[in-house]
Image 1 (tube, rainbow, N blue to C red):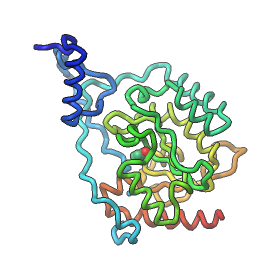
Image 2 (image 1 turned 90 degrees about the vertical axis):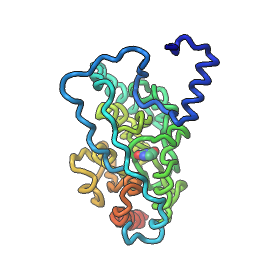
Image 3 (image 1 turned 60 degrees about the vertical axis):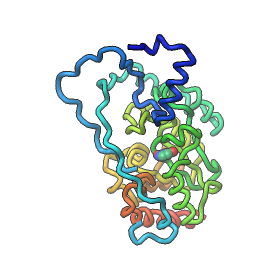
Image 4 (image 1 turned 30 degrees about the vertical axis):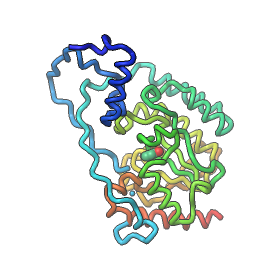
Length: 295
Ligand code: URA
């Protein structure tokens, strides 16, 4: 059998090009697996399938929402990882501490972006193509926090530029906003391989920067897109279907003013479950009212 190590650079490059042409254009695992070597047999208890994807968002939809893209097919089932999850390195709390200190030292959004770009405490950075920091107007009174970049965002280095971003743009437009009057970021700054669910460790590694980001933007209203964002920012355990549409008071520090925050359904979830758009539309109407109250 030909070992990949026997190939010339040119042959390896054409093999890679062939794989990309066949659609294998992303790494699914954190580490490459050398399938030319015998694999250890996996014994012991079956690895449980990961929990169903967290909903990432109008039956009787108003016209603006009804123009949504055709529903996406259901997410393909995620196969159990070939190797058991790696234990969390003992240095994680330290990294989280470092992230806190680093984030706290940033006095501007530009400094914070630079800090995120140099931060090496989140392993996702190694497999991502780009750091995805934010898009839109940092001076806007409306700020969205999503979950994590997907493939399109990873390629372009901007949040919500794929199909769910297009739906988010239409939802914004329906209440008279766009990316010049809103600011958008995510809980994670790097794409989880294969769009898997972020782990609690990855969330904790990025969270200090997200909290500081909200402090520096100081929006009048915060919108949390999907369960990961809502539960993380609001420190809640209930699911997004229970949290959505309720107003919370978000405050990172006693000395800072409270920011009204509303969780709503994630646009990617709405693309898969268009029947739920009615609920998202209700949330957006409530948001519009709150924004007009905020002046
Ligand atoms: N989903 C997210 O949560 N964020 C993005 O940037 C894109 C898709």
